[in-house]
Image (cartoon, rainbow, N blue to C red; front, side):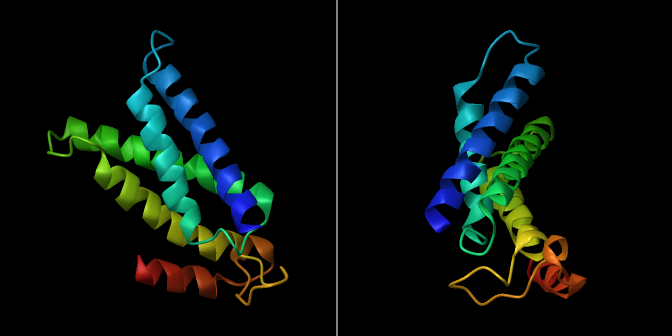
Length: 135
């Protein structure tokens, strides 16, 4: 399950990055560095949850993780801050989303793992609150 979730998150992140770069350039060009950073953001986002979520949730987590990385990198560039490779967006914003995703999508009923269920899987907001405290 962890491997399939990681692959699904990569697919979701790649799709999000492709949409983002196409929309931001108004269809003129696809920026490879944005695709790469989007996929990396998706991988960072799924890291905390890969063994504790359903495979369909991994697509959503990767999609949002990719957008978190790309949007935060855009804000950093607009603020004229020094981050030439987009590491803050990829490892910062996507990681914070990944921590939140545990509290939202974790499923305590999945075999092979003991975790409290997240908010979207019948759990309470307690796990989400704990994850946000760590972020």
